[in-house]
Image (cartoon, rainbow, N blue to C red; front, side, top):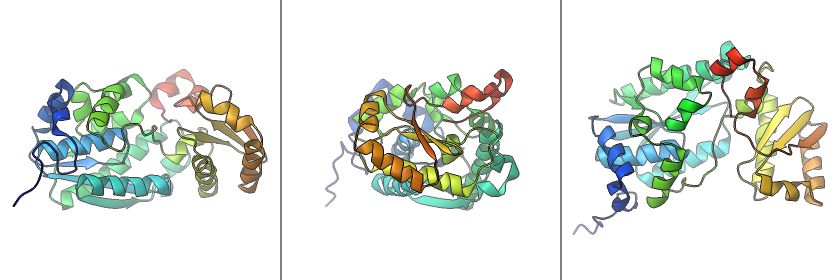
Length: 294
C-alpha cells in the first residue's frame, strides 16, 4: 500500500507552499520544459529551483554540480547532501578553473570567464545524461548588481526560471521557508576567489588559507563571514552584531594565533561588517559594470 502523504512532496516539503502566487508562477515557468538539468550549487537559489523543478516535472530533473578549485569543501558536501534530501539525482563534474589563465590572473572579468566555462561543462554533462535544457538560479536581485556571470549565462541560452517567475532573494527565502528547505536561511555563498582583490593572481595557497580561516570562524558559531586576503593582511568581514565578540578576549587572541599560523602577519576587523561585493569598490567605473565578486 502506498503510504505517501499527498500533501507532501517526495522530499517531505508541504505542497501547500506551491499553491502560493509565487509558487504557482515558478511551477508554471518550469512546466514549459519536458526535462531539465539544474546547475546546482546547494545555495538558497539553486536549492529552491531544484525543488521546484522536481515538483513541476515530476522527477524529470537532474542536478549538475561543478567541483572546482575555487570552492570550499564544506559547500561541495552540503550540495551533495541537499540533493540527496530532495531525492534528485546528481552528476558532479570536476572543473579545473585555475588552469585557465583568464581566470587565474583574477581580472575584473574573471566571473564572466569562469561562468562560461562552468556552464559549458555542466551543459555537456547534462547532455550526456539526456538533458538538453539547463537552468541556473539567477534571481531578480542579480539584475541590480554586478553579475558578469549572468551575461555569460544569457549568451549561452541558459534558462532563468526564478527571474521569469519574478522572484527576488526575499521571495526565494520566503518560499524556501514555507517549504522547510534546509537552505532558507543559509548565508549567501560565493567562490573563494571573491576573497582575493582583483589583479592579485589566484594562488592555491592563498585560497586554502582563506578557506581554513573561514572554517575557523564558522566552527566558533559565526555565519555570513568573509576573510578577505590582502597579502600579509587578513581582513575579516562579519555581521555587525558579531563584531564585539570578534574583538573581545579571549577569542581575539585565538583568531590572531590561528591566522598567523595560516601565514597572515596582520589580522584586521572591518568595522563596516560584511558587505557583499566589497572588493568591487576598487574597480574603476567601467570595469565595475563588467566585473564581479561577492
